[in-house]
Length: 485
Image 1 (cartoon, rainbow, N blue to C red):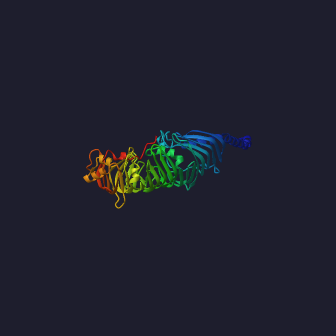
Image 2 (image 1 turned 120 degrees about the vertical axis):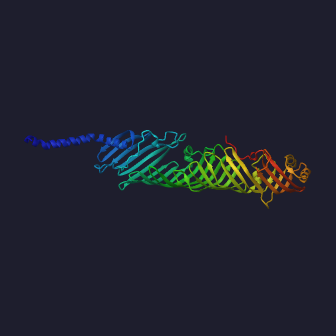
Image 3 (image 1 turned 180 degrees about the vertical axis):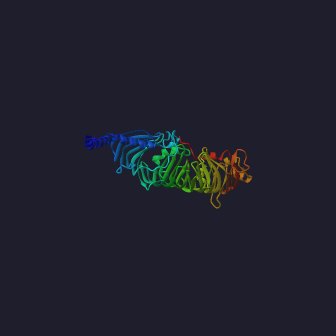
């Protein structure tokens, strides 16, 4: 090397270093943007757009960020990466402000959250650590469903590494009629998740439309209200979702829009043994007042459970109606069949209140009966398959009727009874009942009849006893439920 060149070498080094520094300064915005796009593309993002605000080795700030993963659009007002150890392979401390995403919950739009249904889905990636020291996200999720107004929920998410392969985080969601707090741990480089829902609360009136877009209720739609609370925990892997939950309903109220059915004072407690398969242990449903048309029911209590999304198991039901205490035998309700078959044990049914539901009947009656009724409840109404009602022994009971109408009804009676009725003329006959029995669809009925009534009692003029076959369907005499127009 010549002496002249040797003398210039320090100057050349300074110039070269200056050129490198200037080059880095000039390329810094481009390098920051390149790094941002690279990380997002590794996560499967496309159509990435943002405005670079600051780019330095230790700090990167972008605004108006927007990108897609498959068809789902994500956006954020501001994203900050603080990298105090900028020489390490890490994004440092990540803070996301004003994050935005939309979630369609009823499938009315192509479900952007079910990413496995989209073309281009690849095999699961190899486990890899998250190159992040911490994550703080504040944002908003817009929940959508067809024919429903959008509901906006604020989301706060925070997480940090625990050891080399695990992450611990917390989640808070808040919005109109919905609150949730929870947390979780990502295990094994993100291949497994342990999660807990510490508390969740949902207002039925606010979210009833979204619920009924996903759950088909019998004879829907319904107007609903009340408060649902719950807790849950579970473990998720690529092949399994194992979770349990406890859910409660309080201050519930429901009313069908197409049928005259309403319930108030509804409470329920269910424990899910398998949340993914919607399977529960036996729980309790309580209804203070249930009105089915003109038939009022009180103090309803049912032991219920779910076995998937199509089967409701009922271990037993008790309720009060028309002065009686009624017990229903265990049964299953299948959503696809939309019918219930069970046997009702009736204790102390008030005959006068029952007659109020049969406006075409021109007789007067009092007393209480016990019995058993095998019923089938369908969309078309209630059918009594078979059963009986019998007068309670030792309880006063009376029957008032027109003697002429009874004679012409075709009832079978003795000559003594016929003579007593004819002697009454046009006066109302009043019987003090000693026997009353109603058999519904018993063996041996004449064709076209659905029930047989057996009556025996005393009048001031003498004893009267008769058997009467009920022509046609006995259910037609009861006016209980009408369709709302």
